[in-house]
Image (cartoon, rainbow, N blue to C red; front, side, top):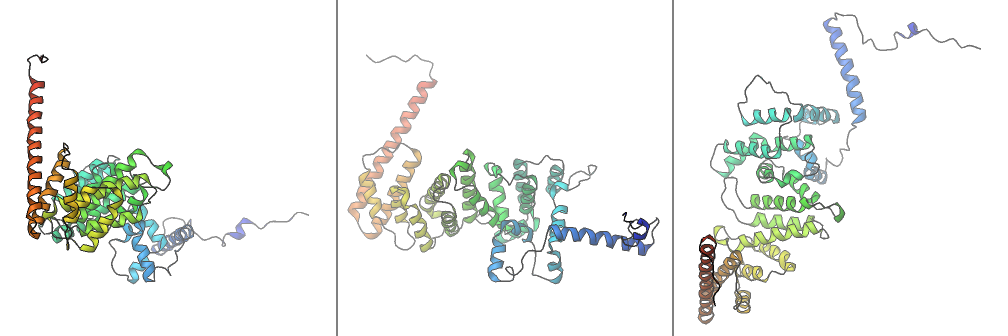
Length: 411
């Protein structure tokens, strides 16, 4: 038996009337727009459902959100929650805003000449000409145009510019953040200050973790250099104000402690980068200690403890002389006696030994040990004589190389 189907015309009222004959009235146009918008948002809500909000309503959930680098970059400029802000946080709105704010889709009028670093940046991005080196130049240019002299004025200017977030959005949209190779360029040192000023430092710490994978088979040659550059940029930012003045090393010690906690101990890249980080901070804590105020004793001691497994007796002896509360000269004196006959030909090593001896001599005079202080002064005199002899020999070698006279063997 053949089943008779319903005529198509009978279904004309079943489907919404979208294709109306033109021209439409104002009311019909509004109905058409609402119909399309509702359908579009319904599909987007299906593809991008609401995230659980219970976690975010608790302090712990708020902390997790603030530590999430992907969410942090999107919400760093948001203010206190209001009904309007909450409405904009719908998944659909976030998805649409992410599309519309993608820097790769930015349109620049080619007829207009760029009038600011931001116009130049957007134009280069829209044309596919932006590179990490050019992004570093953009940040440097923005930094020079920020008015003010105090650290707070400069920080507020950096925040107002939004340049760090702008570069970060470009890195993500272009895919350069996927492998982090851009950290091998000078962009890292230019970007980190803006990220710290704009509250995006958690993104940098997520890069730290990603650059030291637990599986050594995933490590590439450039991982070590990128992680080292990044940690050095964080160390510098943590101990220098936005105006360039040198601060206490407390912030750098905290960064060292955090890096030691988050990086996997079984990673060779992590171990080598941490060693470079620790040694550079040890140099600043001793040789350049007079340039900064005294640090916190607990943080200083935690930093010293991290470096004990490295087996660096010279650093340890020098750090004991610079303890914020209870400096000690014992390890320094032992080190000098044990190495009294060694020739320190490396200029950096010689400078470190000289600084150690000077600091030890000052400390010995303070405690009244004149005999040991006299021996340290003789130790310094011998090192100085060796240094002058090395300089003289270098001059003789250079003169021999540049001379046109033949060299005869002595008989």
